[in-house]
Length: 313
Image (tube, rainbow, N blue to C red; front, side, top):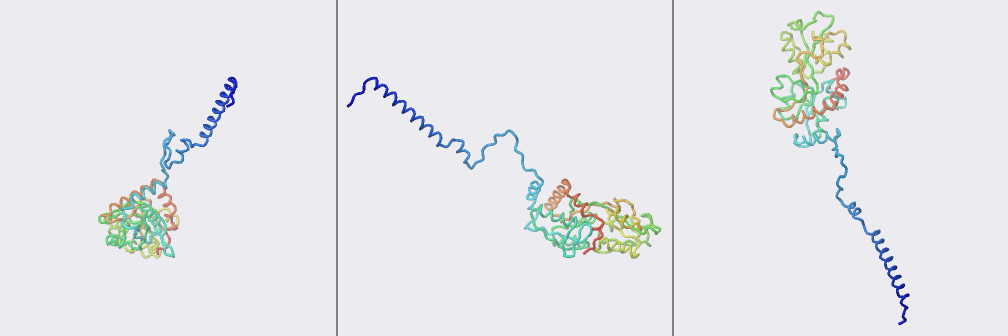
């Protein structure tokens, strides 16, 4: 073996140590570069990382989300997937188009209520005079029309929170002698009244001596026509139309001349007395419609004189 002098041997050892250190350092650097960091491993986890912000997490409180949550909460109020609704043509609240479609305030609310319940809707045409009898016979789950809560009806059926409130007004020819309720309360006076309506209730209470001309399943146009053709002395109507009718027909006089009328009553949906869950759902829905302003906007849109004078079909 060739011997290396002592000084050169020492230098060789030092050089070897330096080379080894470089190799180790390089290996460590390569390892740090190619090995996944703990943070990268956590990022690939399927679990969401914990919240590190101190700001509170705000739930989705949009009207759409709130409406959907409320709807699903009441879906068990109706068995099956369809809400059956008895409905009758009664402008301006309910209008049936020439192609048989239902529109205006009540049908729009009916459809929204079905959506609130997460159900489909089926409209079943009815008449005012037989509406509650059909409800009691189970022909439909609710009456979705604008029927007033009269004392007689309240004895046999449950009413929801009303979507409209009005009383009874009488209209007479302005050129005639009648100007007061007392003058209307006379056997010689004939008054056109829709059968079974709140107007009939008010007439029998305040004008018991007058002669009622009962018109079953009639519309506002039908009772107005009785006065226009001079078949009656007066006709009865809901008081909410006083300003509009007074402007359109200045030849007529309203008694009393205000929008409150006689026996102001709410108009709401009607249910069988044992349908407590469905009634609770209806009241919850109506409270929401009042609070969010939709009921007021829909009333302004649909309850107009033009709609009131639409033909009943």
